[in-house]
Amino acid sequence: MKYIMCAKLFPPYHPKAGRPTGFRESIVNGRKLHTLRASAGNKKNGDIVSLREWSGRPYASKQVEFARCKIAISPKRIWMGGADEFAIVNTAHCDGLSPIDFLHWFTRGKDQPICFVGVCIWFLELIRTDRTKQRRMT
Image (cartoon, rainbow, N blue to C red; front, side, top):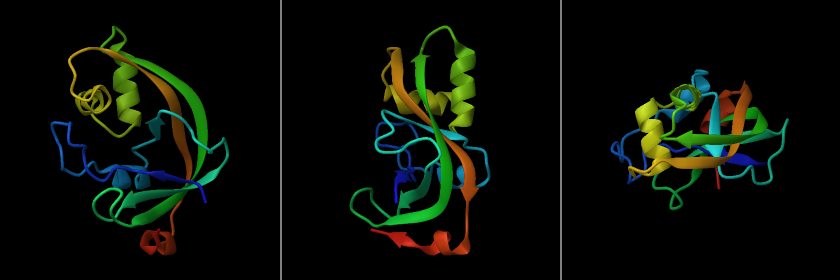
């Protein structure tokens, strides 16, 4: 099954490094509507994907599935640090982050503006069961 890994903790370069992102809860509660990625990989519109997070340290622990979801994919280009503040605020909100946390995440703490070019993977229909909450993936 195709899958999407969701960060459990903020990355080392972020001011909130090591603190929980809350992405899992935000997806399950419908507050995180999408994820931004450099590419869609082998995923396509309408796919059902496994949403996962690491049980411990990334790449050194097991993957844990917490839900499955139908997705849609669209190209995304956003200028971070530009004049269109509404686009940043709206995209950050849909991504489950505050605008400040969003900018730190994607600019990696650099003061210079950047242009993100990639894809937006929308979480359309969440399929959450007791079985998927407990199932560990390797």
